[in-house]
Length: 131
Image (spheres, rainbow, N blue to C red):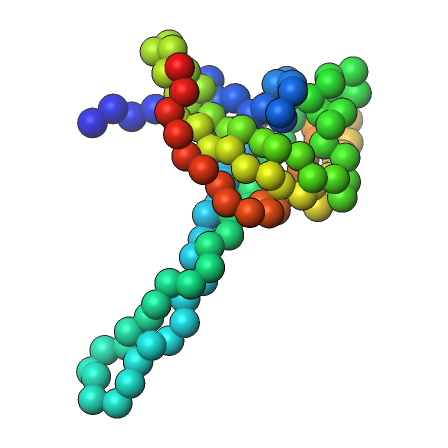
């Protein structure tokens, strides 16, 4: 089974690649409800609604059109490729609409200024393979 590194990861808006990305993550969860009833020794649960959220950290570049689209409170379509194309020309990708809910620009004299951005999905996150 192949394994991948994040070295070639790509994150894009509907119209631009977000440049100078150092890292990003996607977290997908499913809410559950207790479906246990009398007479069972083990709890039973049922999956109900799913949700997703994530974050990215990039070197701050106020001239980058991809970063410029990530405005606090806005909804953007994001496409995330954790392994990029990894030299194969084919990529697993996740696409969905997300609300930008926080942006941080930490500044330290011993490092580059970064933009740390958090987002929350609104609607489905779809997984596909692109070439």
